[in-house]
Length: 271
Picture 1: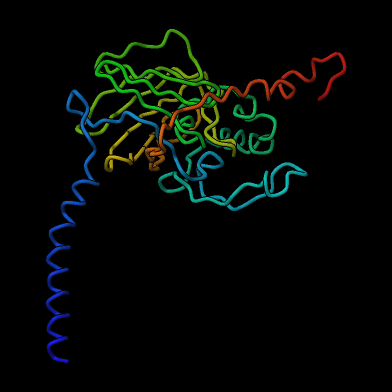
Picture 2: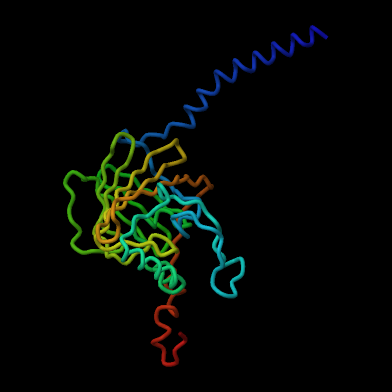
């Protein structure tokens, strides 16, 4: 019996030593992002957010959807991604947000298949691809065939000639973090299906920080003096899609929105 006990102790000790040796190696393998040709973290690949930020950036309970859609159209509960869970609206902007919420089933730009804007494109429930170069970084989104180019000349940015849904983006590396400044928006985008919004004066600074080879911590700080009393930040992880032959498929959704957009113009209106 004592011999058996000594054998078990020896085995446990051996396993402990082995685990001490293996854990750092595993942590190193899992904790370091691979490097691109220029020495910066390699962000190339297909990424996707997991969560309910596309429904509501803030904490929210489950709720019913449009009539007769049952559980399929219901809103799932979710934890917020806003740091501090408070969006510092001005009184007028808060009233607009509440009006947006009441009319979300007809007025949300996503329902109309308009381009999602920034940062909403990042956490829509669809994958997106990062194509990384040294002078330009391309981000390709499936929804409404949206895309954006990050011009890696943040020190000498060029103002967008016109305002647009996706704005104009300039980036630079801060150590291993890709920092992107985006502005030049048209003020029509929402941040989620709950009606959170901003004006054309919106400025967004995004930070993409690798947490290993298959995860990125995404942060976006939003500033708009027309809408908010102070800057505020969202934070959520992005995960690399590891499916075999994964790709971003085009979601050409405009044909599904034609009646919503133009039904009132028909000879016999459908809306």
